[in-house]
Length: 195
Length: 339
Image (cartoon, rainbow over all chains, first blue to last red; front, side, top):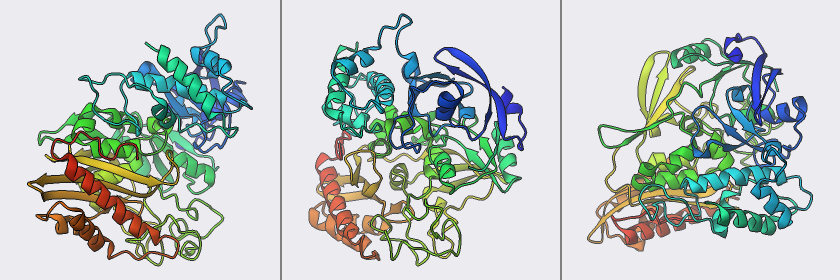
């Protein structure tokens, strides 16, 4: 791995970012966040820069690393990840959610159907976050809103996503337009249809 | 942000050597706090040594009957672990109460322990702060201190430790496994953190090059009857104003053992040993829970805008202990839900 052979004094590295299934060879200053690499170096501007401090969730992308478990793809704040840290991961952005024929991801379709946005700036982060959140619930991960930490069935059965669960699990994504009511409705729809 | 080098050493020994030999070097794990502080100009390492591939990322049972949690375990995996959820609900609840789903996926156990205070003055590089620039002063005492310490502070610093997880670990008598230039050693969680005194820039007893590799939780038979309650300004994704981690062993209406730790009230996760001693052998009643809290909080030295935390901490302690006394030894981890 190229990043591993840099010396302590190099301030940039040659690295490969795999985004939406495509490998990109780049030389990046180590200060470059994954968010800035996506937007400024790869032209993938669907991922938005809101607060740039991990507080708003607009930059949420999905990442699958060598040791990743839940549904293979975890939601992360790309503004707090240095791009050089993600060189061995597979990254999925909002541009990579639709099918190859352009068919919308069920969450994208639900957001359209429920008018779950006003300005739309937080929407890519909301949808990426919700995608992974449904996987977390399917894997039985509890949340602060879960009444019990112990699943009703042995093992870690899926969590039923009521409104309180969805609100808590999506609290890392802010919407300054206040479209939360419809965001909740859109995610609830998809959660009901999930296997 | 200052330019910096980035290394991925092949093993922990090489990582420790890289940081030990370079004063400006820092370990990098999840990065959720460090990268943010670098953006803010509060931290300016000239070399990041990425240890995410080196740290253990599994949770293993110990021979003693406890758990050994690798320092590289992500917060979300810790909270989801069935053994943690069933055996140490206070820990699962504390982790779930912190940050957001995204941040819990990134943040590691080791990094969580070493995250820095969210005191506004510490995080603003244009302001004086004795923790950030020793000797520069502390504007918080006369300024914005609503969410700062009521216990354990000093004239030089009243910052609070921000971790939820560490409050639960304090109550559980966790032991921190450290490797460093001088070899491995074990540090009880209470011995990891330092009160500020006149050196608020020194927050832990770790030395340059020390790397947290794991956190060990000893067995605690009544830890199943434990809970974490967090009071905050928003319903979710906010730091605590006051939080309480508690485990209670009640038999025949009397407290046999109690574990109690308070968060967001001190520069360290505050283990309430005074209250625990008051409770031992006493009736499990609101009156005694209140006496225990009052005795612990008698040491509080609040500032004008955070005096409310004394009453708030008392009320949370009394309510939580009451709930744990009611759920009894067959606790299901329900106490403290959704707070």
